[in-house]
Length: 453
Image 1 (tube, rainbow, N blue to C red):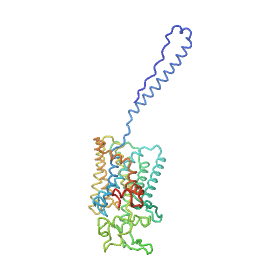
Image 2 (cartoon, rainbow, N blue to C red; image 1 turned 90 degrees about the horizontal axis):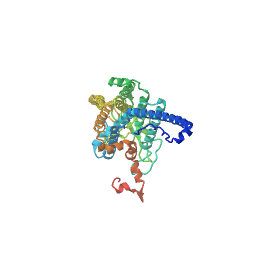
Image 3 (cartoon, one colour; image 1 turned 180 degrees about the horizontal axis):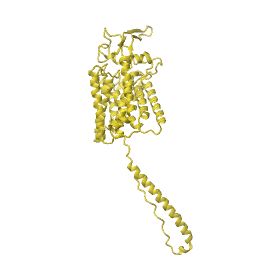
Image 4 (spheres, rainbow, N blue to C red; image 1 turned 90 degrees about the vertical axis):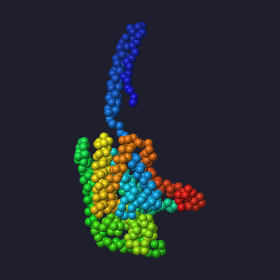
């Protein structure tokens, strides 16, 4: 910080011979310099006052624990993608149940919610903030469709392009984009100007956001357990010269949460079209559909008719509860904004965390099973509570105790999460490397180092 001093007064003329000759000129000059001194003193006083005000204002520090949490989630995602096929505990659960891989998506959504509390804490213009949030969501949506819509093919396949009749509309980034937009709009428009000094005033200030989270949860439950699911059928393509195989799935039920007759799949088939859904459904790894369960494999002789049906794990109805996860993360961000004491923050975090974990376990115990594909209410509560526990632990280690050196790599990964996701998780980097080969596409660098086959 620079120190500012007043400009010193001019030096008096000590030459006696010039005093009488230039007396009038000196008096005018003296008056002029006195004005300069006065102006300079005023300017210096203003600068000093500004510096004092700046020193009194709290400096904005980046929340390192949030970057570390995001980086840890990215690292977990890469681990799941690379080792999930080898270690069942790291792979997604085929249907009901919870594995390490099933925490990745809700962790990302939770982090998005926490971040939005800082991004839109006090927008200067709500209309401009709304326009920016819509633009960001559209960019994320377009990137997700490009990466997961089918335009970029698998590793060992250097071709590209997608038939618009079969493009996949939903995906990981698309779900994050939807949750981001709804949560951002809530933070911009659905909060009051109340002063927060305790937990009750915090809830009162953001009560409309909590009302929306409750409304979305009720709508999800009403649709999941109340809508009628009729019989349906789908086609499985065979050889180009032969007609596709047609499979019929018998349903005619309400409230079914199994793979074949749930409302989540019915809504996606009706609104998006079955040809635009994910063609490698997670339930194809169930024992009923794979002899290599919990991995993919050939169909058993008595496999049900629905085993090969497309199903999108990031569908429309399940994304409703993804928004709720994002709103929960937003609440944790509000606690950071309004409470500066570490102990108070941790207390106000652990109260909803404990309630969420307990609610998730109780709901699962009473038949509302933890299910990542359906994004069930029990799954929402349990994973959001787990995110809260992990976030509090990282916050204690990094921001409170100051153990940040050991997490520098995770912090860097968290600050470049989207880039790492695009390059690593979406196979852009491996496909780019495979584009350089000797004579045949199979003779590439990845095969040379033993990564590709």
